[in-house]
Image (cartoon, rainbow, N blue to C red; front, side, top):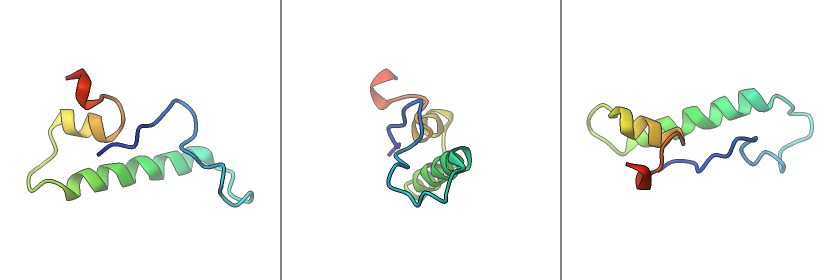
Length: 62
C-alpha cells in the first residue's frame, strides 16, 4: 500500500501532452491511493494507515 510519492509530480511524463494540470493529477493519484487503502480494510482507516496511503509516513518509520 502507498504510492511511494516524491515531492514532484507522480510519474506523469508518459501522459498526453494536452494534459497539463499536474496538481489535479496528483490529487487524483492521492485519492486513488486512499481508495486502494480503504479496499484493504473492513473498518475505518487509522490515522497511521491514512498517512501511509498518502505517502506521509512509511511503514518502517512507525
